[in-house]
Image 1: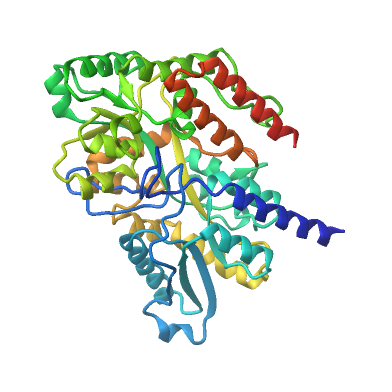
Image 2 (image 1 turned 90 degrees about the horizontal axis):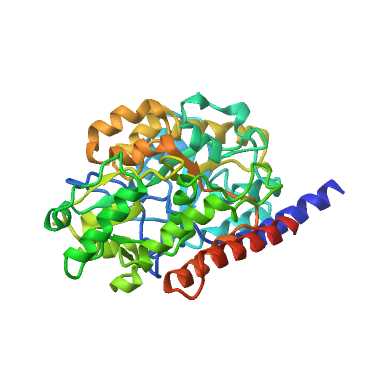
Length: 457
């Protein structure tokens, strides 16, 4: 009976993977950001990073499978595979370099890096077929599905200095009191702004002490005074709005999801504020600014501010290298400041042998330990998830410190299994609210109904 249940759970997870193929970078589509990334706003050299809240995997031209440069060490070593999704050449190459360094310093283990397109489908097939990779990427949104399918070996008993991880990131991969996998890197939402447009409008630039009222007043003034420019570009996307929900004191549900809380006074006030920014003319959607996503509208100089994560940095550096811009934390709402943490971890499957698990966790602890993570994040592609590496990273990328500081006010991007339906419904309804065909009350009523249906399944 136990074996049949496990087979059923894996089959269920396979279907869920196909259903929930969202939450990583995208190269097209309205309100979808391209490759996520970090770098220095003045001198960024990075081109991509892995963690962004909406979209699909950047697949490139195909899988990137590389045994590295340590073939001599591989002959007598345990052979392990690390599978992830293919991203930019810069990221793929840099990660391979870190893997090569691990192989060189661990002669008894040899890791092959396998970065693939159509990642969700390949992971699903490997788990269902009983031949999973020894280590693989897990988006925080999908962790509950893997845990429900009994597909993961808990990291908790193998953890190396777990208290050094930012609490919000550790929480993102902790379910039912168990720490399942350590965070690889992360992104946060912040407020990007164009100082030249603010100067032209005669408006003081944003600060980390800004409030909702400050942002609304500045966006309104800029939209009125600067021809062809909106004060703010906003996406009809739950992954962006949810930060405002938390700033307003709202939430989606209580901790154990026994009660849906999305449709209350706090949520209504937050959504009314968000929608009114667009309806009042202070802000506009990317589509209304002839852009595919907020970063493009901001890069074109069509908006003075954008609410995006550190994935915007390499995009602006590569596409709009002459643009002057800066970043601060998101403004505070009635309940204070809040941001979102979008993160990925390294997971180890439950179904591999114990000796392979031991070796796999040795790899994981290297990649998420102080040495391996510093090597990885020194390139500027990603932010370190360990607090002990904060000062070193800030010294290299001082202009991006607000992104890293936002970790202290960030909530994890994670819900109960099945909530992709909720996210999709909310985004679609929010777009209609922007256009005036739905009210904030309509959106929240629909969201509450969808969430309750998911919980009841």
